[in-house]
Image (cartoon, rainbow, N blue to C red; front, side, top):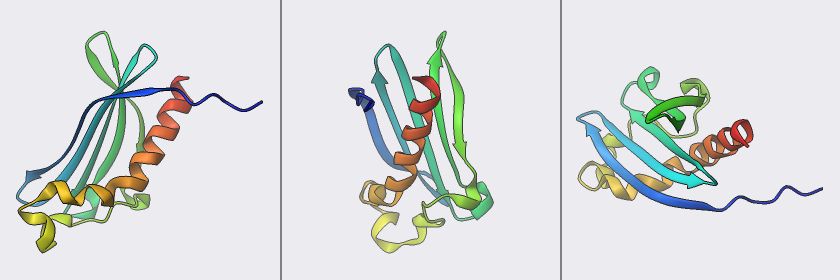
Length: 111
């Protein structure tokens, strides 16, 4: 039996310069009665990159899944690409694969 695709409502989606050496992506969305948050960071140091998924429980974000930095698909050092340094929002496409993976596993865990 095919699993029904749950409807998601985006609350916030932003790609931004999070430090002088990093660009980050954050998405907050709702599925059913749960609010989820995805955070991905492309740092200039590979070991400081991360991809994490959280669920809101009792007004606190609880981590439910993460992708180890060594297998993330988001490139490190995005801040140093000339197209992104002054316009970090245009880097959003670089986060796509990790966004999909975070959503897949977070939803699999929670639903």
